[in-house]
Amino acid sequence: MSRIEELLVTRGMYDTIDISIDDLDEMEKYLSQSEYTGNSIDCFCPKCGANRIFEFVDCKPRINNGVVTVNIADSFGKPSKKPSKEKRYKSLLNSRYVLTYCCTYNREHNAFFDLLVTDSGVMKIGQYPSVADFLRPKTKKYSSILSEQYLKELNTAIYLAAHGVGIGSFVYLRRIIEMLVHETYKGANKNGEVSEDDFFYIKYADSDGIEKARYRKFDEKIELLKDYLPSTLVEKKQIYGIVSKGVHELTEEICMEYYHVISSGVFLILDQKLKIEEEAKLKREIDKGINKIMQFENAQKGNL
Image (tube, rainbow, N blue to C red; front, side, top):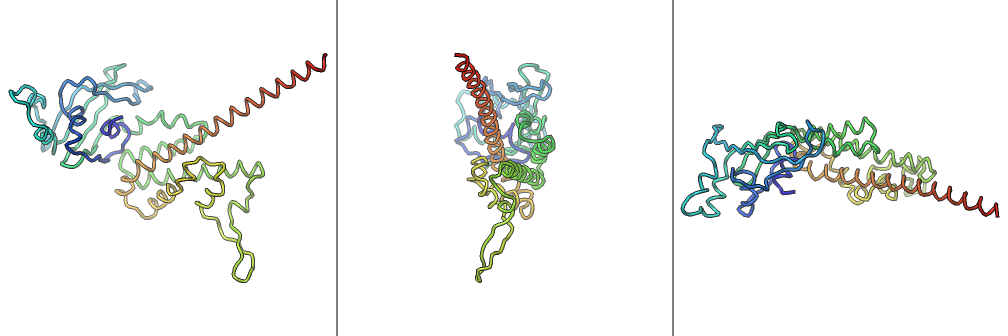
């Protein structure tokens, strides 16, 4: 997936990617009206209810909120001398572009993206359907490890980020992480592997040798459960620290700047948790099958 396609289908509102003249080929692919057959995006179609390929239909550049009616390709598509790379690059800057794509399964299903291109970056300032709509199937697969409540909260985090509400998004991402840790503790506690005292408290001796206890910090709880939790959550405990800081200290803008990396980390954690649960389920099925086979074999021996 190219950087601009990633901006279109996975990044939230007002996210920006840096650009330079080295990105000219990709910029012309998405921002010009040239006949580029490879200009398509792969995303969820809310109206079809399935993943589809969307093909490029149109790109209307706008300057000072007025529609430029000249086809970009016409400005340098048939000149006697092809413009230089630098001139082509500059012709795409400092403009607003409205991109239209259509679903290849049903061409009446459209996707629209509003981009602002400056000297240093491409910013997404509008789109329909929303990022939350595009990412809906990505969260549905977690229904086996997230309750209906937390699946809804994960979707809420995506929705808020798609509309530029970074702090609110961090609130829900933090709750997802806390839920995973506490549910993992409950399982380990039920199996007699982690006691309630060990999970909530750390015991220590003071300078006089008197035993005392303090509340265990959240990152210490993660460390305690490292043999049971997804590896990314254990290795990147900073993810929880960053979302917590976002809730209490960071600005809306900073949260939005951090969102893509942090949400990607949370999705990776959920993917790993899903794999752990699937492997545990497969192991139970194999154990059950082997026990059944052994019972049959033993019965056969008894009949000899």
